[in-house]
Image 1 (tube, helix red, strand yellow):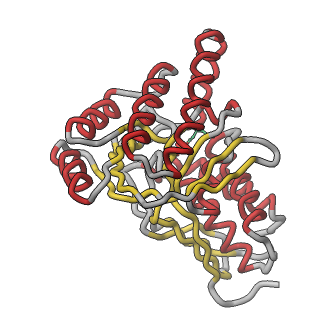
Image 2 (cartoon, helix red, strand yellow; image 1 turned 60 degrees about the vertical axis):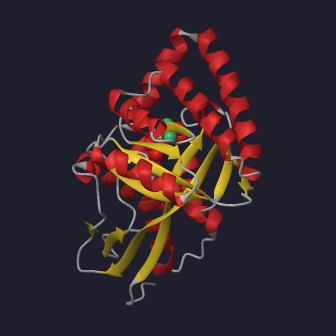
Image 3 (cartoon, rainbow, N blue to C red; image 1 turned 90 degrees about the horizontal axis):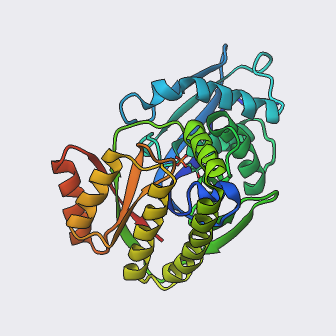
Length: 311
Ligand code: PMV
């Protein structure tokens, strides 16, 4: 039964604070939702179409077009929606800039899942929406850990451990802390980078075992530091996490330049976030003044910078 009115859904952007890549191997990771959202609108139409009006890093949408089509097909198949019989127009918009590292794909999957759920009166709760968004993420990631869609669906700060079902623990911070995300402008491919890491792990099992052990400890220590809003400690742990990410080969010159700009201008910690080899980095910049200084320094060096809060 299709209703005539337009249905709407949302999904949050996210920043992975600790544990990207390691999360794929069952190490707990921490992500925070951002205030930026993707909105999906669904309405009946005479043909099936997707209109993508999201703001973007130049080239992002074109590069992800094929994966977006695959993702949408998976969502519709999972929900058993036949768009031949029930043609719909899906329109994406919102203030989340589509770029590698902000969870743009997961935010759009959660938004589409919610809008379709409303339009076709499927009666899914958040857990159901998260499952649909995970199916959609497969179109972009291959086998995603599930952290992105979980952050996109639920919002807030989450401690996430991969599994079926995944373990999701909410973290509340005493006070929010300002961050600046620097954008390399490079769109990286999650599937390729995750596969490269898997190859490297196979070649260096002992080194990876040691790296994974420390990654797990970092997440555990970070959880306490976040609860206490201990910015010095969170920053130190971010730097250490970045060192592990360098060792597994997912950083790049542009990310390192942004990390250096952040640190040189007073950020307490700085690391890449998400896939790496491009995309975004995150720096911890408590207080509006420091946040402004770091964001301006990134811009002066020709990078896009986004101001946000965690918690
Ligand atoms: O680049 P993003 O924001 O989509 O994050 C990818 C995170 C990885 O840990 C690299 C992959 C995953 O499935 O968790």
